[in-house]
Length: 138
Image 1 (cartoon, rainbow, N blue to C red):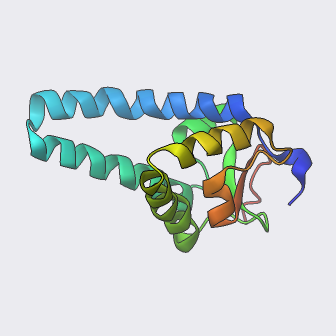
Image 2 (image 1 turned 60 degrees about the vertical axis):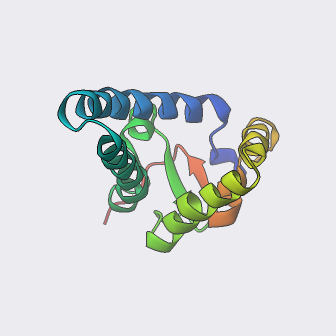
């Protein structure tokens, strides 16, 4: 990993906000007007999970928000994330954040803001980092 190509706190926040808006508005309409009640929330949660889990696997580490900001998730070796990488990054990290009652998430925010390589707990768990280097598409 070349720490000169890692992305810091604010671009990651910006990408998160774009993703939240792009997902939040349609999902809000879906759960409030199409699928109401508990099942609507379950469908919304599933769509969000699939978006954050599958899109980086199939789109060279990008989500829509990351693409808009010109940043992407990569493994330490510079390759796009695969299935196992995203399991570690999303599922295992989520469990860590839940089990620590959000303290792990706060630590991750501090890590991204203060570490020279800008890696969070979920980056360390999954062996990833966020960069602005374009993918090599073969």
